[in-house]
Length: 184
Image (cartoon, rainbow, N blue to C red):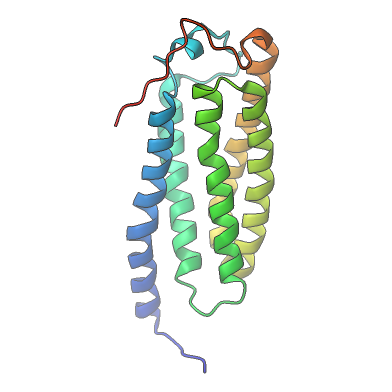
Protein backbone atom coordinates (compact mmCIF):
# COMPACT_ATOMS: atom_id res chain seq x y z
CA UNK A 1 0.00 0.00 0.00
CA UNK A 2 1.37 3.42 -0.95
CA UNK A 3 0.72 6.53 1.07
CA UNK A 4 1.06 10.04 -0.21
CA UNK A 5 2.19 12.66 2.23
CA UNK A 6 1.48 16.33 1.90
CA UNK A 7 4.38 18.71 1.30
CA UNK A 8 3.93 19.96 4.87
CA UNK A 9 4.25 16.44 6.23
CA UNK A 10 7.37 15.86 4.15
CA UNK A 11 8.98 19.09 5.42
CA UNK A 12 8.11 18.15 9.01
CA UNK A 13 9.68 14.71 8.56
CA UNK A 14 12.84 16.24 7.12
CA UNK A 15 13.02 18.71 9.99
CA UNK A 16 12.57 15.96 12.60
CA UNK A 17 15.25 13.80 11.02
CA UNK A 18 17.59 16.82 10.67
CA UNK A 19 17.21 17.62 14.36
CA UNK A 20 18.54 14.13 15.04
CA UNK A 21 21.11 13.52 12.30
CA UNK A 22 22.88 16.88 12.18
CA UNK A 23 23.81 17.06 15.89
CA UNK A 24 24.70 13.34 15.86
CA UNK A 25 27.09 13.62 12.91
CA UNK A 26 28.66 16.85 14.22
CA UNK A 27 29.10 15.36 17.70
CA UNK A 28 30.65 12.14 16.39
CA UNK A 29 33.13 14.10 14.29
CA UNK A 30 34.01 16.36 17.21
CA UNK A 31 34.44 13.45 19.63
CA UNK A 32 36.64 11.52 17.20
CA UNK A 33 38.95 14.50 16.83
CA UNK A 34 39.03 15.29 20.54
CA UNK A 35 39.69 11.70 21.59
CA UNK A 36 42.59 11.47 19.13
CA UNK A 37 44.21 14.73 20.24
CA UNK A 38 43.78 16.24 16.79
CA UNK A 39 45.52 19.32 15.54
CA UNK A 40 47.87 21.83 17.14
CA UNK A 41 48.83 20.99 20.70
CA UNK A 42 49.62 17.40 19.80
CA UNK A 43 53.42 17.23 20.28
CA UNK A 44 53.91 14.67 17.52
CA UNK A 45 51.87 16.73 15.06
CA UNK A 46 53.49 20.01 16.08
CA UNK A 47 56.92 18.51 15.29
CA UNK A 48 55.90 17.51 11.75
CA UNK A 49 57.02 19.54 8.77
CA UNK A 50 53.85 21.04 7.25
CA UNK A 51 53.13 20.97 3.50
CA UNK A 52 52.85 24.26 1.62
CA UNK A 53 49.12 23.64 1.05
CA UNK A 54 48.44 23.15 4.77
CA UNK A 55 45.65 25.63 5.64
CA UNK A 56 45.51 27.62 8.88
CA UNK A 57 44.60 25.25 11.73
CA UNK A 58 41.32 27.09 12.44
CA UNK A 59 40.12 26.24 8.93
CA UNK A 60 39.79 22.55 9.81
CA UNK A 61 37.26 23.07 12.59
CA UNK A 62 35.22 25.48 10.47
CA UNK A 63 35.26 23.34 7.33
CA UNK A 64 34.54 20.07 9.10
CA UNK A 65 31.67 21.63 11.06
CA UNK A 66 30.06 22.90 7.86
CA UNK A 67 30.62 19.59 6.08
CA UNK A 68 29.20 17.57 8.97
CA UNK A 69 26.08 19.76 8.98
CA UNK A 70 25.69 19.29 5.22
CA UNK A 71 26.09 15.52 5.31
CA UNK A 72 23.79 15.32 8.34
CA UNK A 73 21.11 17.13 6.31
CA UNK A 74 21.78 14.83 3.34
CA UNK A 75 21.26 11.81 5.59
CA UNK A 76 18.06 13.35 6.98
CA UNK A 77 16.77 13.77 3.43
CA UNK A 78 17.32 10.08 2.77
CA UNK A 79 15.83 8.96 6.08
CA UNK A 80 12.76 11.11 5.49
CA UNK A 81 12.22 9.50 2.08
CA UNK A 82 10.05 6.83 3.61
CA UNK A 83 9.29 4.01 1.21
CA UNK A 84 11.98 5.02 -1.28
CA UNK A 85 13.63 2.13 -3.04
CA UNK A 86 17.27 1.79 -1.98
CA UNK A 87 16.86 3.84 1.20
CA UNK A 88 18.27 1.12 3.49
CA UNK A 89 21.29 0.53 1.24
CA UNK A 90 21.96 4.27 0.97
CA UNK A 91 21.76 4.62 4.75
CA UNK A 92 24.13 1.66 5.23
CA UNK A 93 26.61 3.18 2.77
CA UNK A 94 26.44 6.46 4.71
CA UNK A 95 27.17 4.67 7.99
CA UNK A 96 30.13 2.83 6.44
CA UNK A 97 31.69 6.01 5.05
CA UNK A 98 31.13 7.81 8.37
CA UNK A 99 32.86 5.01 10.31
CA UNK A 100 35.80 5.24 7.90
CA UNK A 101 35.79 9.04 8.38
CA UNK A 102 35.81 8.75 12.15
CA UNK A 103 38.79 6.38 12.04
CA UNK A 104 41.08 8.93 10.34
CA UNK A 105 41.85 11.17 13.33
CA UNK A 106 42.77 8.32 15.71
CA UNK A 107 44.92 6.72 13.01
CA UNK A 108 46.79 9.92 12.15
CA UNK A 109 46.94 11.82 15.44
CA UNK A 110 46.87 9.08 18.08
CA UNK A 111 48.57 6.17 16.31
CA UNK A 112 50.85 8.37 14.16
CA UNK A 113 50.17 6.16 11.15
CA UNK A 114 50.45 8.61 8.26
CA UNK A 115 50.43 5.85 5.65
CA UNK A 116 47.37 4.26 7.24
CA UNK A 117 45.63 7.64 7.38
CA UNK A 118 46.36 8.17 3.68
CA UNK A 119 44.76 4.85 2.75
CA UNK A 120 41.81 5.69 4.99
CA UNK A 121 41.24 8.88 2.96
CA UNK A 122 41.34 6.83 -0.24
CA UNK A 123 38.82 4.35 1.17
CA UNK A 124 36.71 7.25 2.44
CA UNK A 125 36.64 8.88 -1.00
CA UNK A 126 35.50 5.62 -2.60
CA UNK A 127 32.82 5.12 0.07
CA UNK A 128 31.63 8.72 -0.37
CA UNK A 129 31.32 8.25 -4.15
CA UNK A 130 29.19 5.14 -3.56
CA UNK A 131 27.08 7.04 -1.00
CA UNK A 132 26.62 9.98 -3.38
CA UNK A 133 25.45 7.64 -6.15
CA UNK A 134 22.96 5.92 -3.86
CA UNK A 135 21.72 9.22 -2.37
CA UNK A 136 21.36 10.75 -5.85
CA UNK A 137 18.94 8.00 -6.90
CA UNK A 138 16.67 8.82 -3.98
CA UNK A 139 17.10 12.58 -3.56
CA UNK A 140 19.47 14.31 -6.02
CA UNK A 141 19.88 17.25 -3.63
CA UNK A 142 21.11 14.85 -0.93
CA UNK A 143 23.77 13.63 -3.33
CA UNK A 144 24.72 17.21 -4.18
CA UNK A 145 25.13 18.05 -0.49
CA UNK A 146 27.79 15.34 -0.30
CA UNK A 147 29.92 16.77 -3.15
CA UNK A 148 31.83 19.39 -1.08
CA UNK A 149 32.59 16.64 1.43
CA UNK A 150 34.07 14.50 -1.34
CA UNK A 151 36.15 17.45 -2.55
CA UNK A 152 37.50 18.11 0.96
CA UNK A 153 38.34 14.43 1.49
CA UNK A 154 40.25 14.41 -1.82
CA UNK A 155 42.15 17.47 -0.60
CA UNK A 156 42.77 15.66 2.71
CA UNK A 157 44.21 12.69 0.79
CA UNK A 158 46.65 14.97 -1.03
CA UNK A 159 47.54 16.75 2.21
CA UNK A 160 48.08 13.46 4.06
CA UNK A 161 50.26 12.17 1.22
CA UNK A 162 52.34 15.36 1.40
CA UNK A 163 52.73 14.94 5.17
CA UNK A 164 54.05 11.45 4.49
CA UNK A 165 56.48 12.70 1.84
CA UNK A 166 57.81 15.45 4.11
CA UNK A 167 57.94 13.31 7.27
CA UNK A 168 58.75 9.69 6.31
CA UNK A 169 60.53 9.05 9.61
CA UNK A 170 57.49 10.17 11.63
CA UNK A 171 55.20 7.49 10.18
CA UNK A 172 54.24 5.23 13.06
CA UNK A 173 56.79 6.84 15.37
CA UNK A 174 56.08 6.90 19.08
CA UNK A 175 58.70 8.61 21.18
CA UNK A 176 59.06 10.14 24.57
CA UNK A 177 57.62 13.38 23.20
CA UNK A 178 54.57 11.52 21.94
CA UNK A 179 51.53 12.29 24.02
CA UNK A 180 47.94 11.34 23.34
CA UNK A 181 45.46 13.79 24.85
CA UNK A 182 41.96 12.66 25.62
CA UNK A 183 39.61 15.40 26.77
CA UNK A 184 35.93 14.95 27.25
